[in-house]
Image 1 (cartoon, one colour):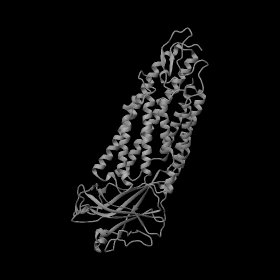
Image 2 (image 1 turned 90 degrees about the vertical axis):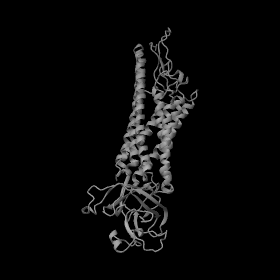
Image 3 (image 1 turned 90 degrees about the horizontal axis):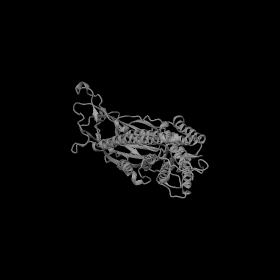
Image 4 (image 1 turned 180 degrees about the horizontal axis):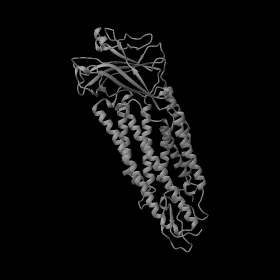
Length: 546
């Protein structure tokens, strides 16, 4: 009866497999570092102050900041006061992208951040907790001559968080406040070539709209989108890796089904890990280039969440099945205390994601960061998620330490064996220890990637303007996940080889034919033997005849 490939494959072949996977891992980092551009690009826009001269406002009228049909413009609010133009009739217009450029579906998403230039005035200071009310509309078109088509319209509120670093005196009037950036808009697809934002800051004394918010001089927008070159590299990786994982997964499960016993827990979990990896690999993003699928960001988050849950659960079960203690395992119920919190945490992150990106499917100007409660909730989720990820990694390190300790405790029986058998089992111990260290390394990189991703999500809400995460990090981690899953399915597939002429690796290996039974020692937890998990990985402490 054969064991797993990790047990029976020759050291030379295993080294070749390991070096090949390592080269692919290096290639994954090089693709991002040498070929792909940076993941995102930030473009700054200064809003043009247009004047709405119509007596009765038309909902369908759009104000262009430049071009043949550009609006009537003013340079400053002092000019508006001189011309007796009311604040409600001033429209801040921003055309995305810049002149003589086009947006592209390869940009995948568009995130817009709002920055206000607010001057200090003694008679118009920013009060504590001031809220700015925004009447904003978004339109699109695909050529330079057609009419604008409304895409979204909303009335939003944003809280101003500003500091005036000098003394509030007459001499300092006109100096600018230092204000935090405001989350403004997020669109899940860039299906059109041109976008137009019209922003109004209506003033109403009776309703206390936009009063005591300082003297607004200018509006700046920062548009962030994914680089088209990075998108193409990302899609190419997904397209290449999808069949690779799918083929190895089918091959792995076919070998399992050829066994004369039903699959055990670890085999099923490895298959589930392969399925989740295939699910996240499938390049459905290709369709987003031709279709206006605004839900792709949410769908991507769901896919990644499922993979995270499966990967973290797999590592717990994988290490647990290698503990070699006296606990009866091979049952999912044994791990519910460890897997349960992972599933619950993933569900909470899903709810949090639905609260923002789910709403943005109908209102791209919605942001959970716009209110104090939402900001505290979002910050709490990010902090708790980071802490939980670190605690998970520490717990995984503890489980790996237990595995190493238990394996070391079984080594006392090795000196009593023949040299050939002792070398064989020492080799097995080294292989499984090395695999555990690789698992721990992958877990560490995954936790780091998860924390950076969560911080990156909130990065714009903390007052920064650029996200400097190298493309090599994304492609390298993504390649690492695929290579790890590939290696696990390959190494834990049943082997057609046998160790020795009379004994197979991983069976109960008896002592001398004279029959003094030695101490049975459970060495590993490979689960590919016909006898099932109760008879796996045992060897005697008495030297065997070979």
